[in-house]
Image (cartoon, rainbow, N blue to C red; front, side, top):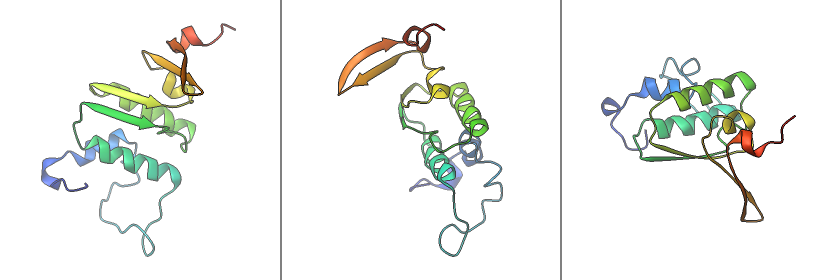
Length: 125
């Protein structure tokens, strides 16, 4: 909880938002060399849960779903966009994240190359 008092946060909700409720349903286990090892996706979602126990005005998510399987990625984005977060800045190249965004900025070589919704930015098939 990175310094927060357990009784002051909604840990089950944060775990649910990070799609970790099944893996961490017990909450009484040891992580690390002599305990449970986390996968890359679990590490990413644990970092997200640390953000979700707080109520920041801004969440910056840098490639949050890059190590997730398709089903878990879908759940994560559905839950994240269903929650009442004031502002999200999402850095991603994954369509599952981008399709829900209301405004996308495309950067090339550090310069703004395009902006709009995903439908506006992708060529019509």
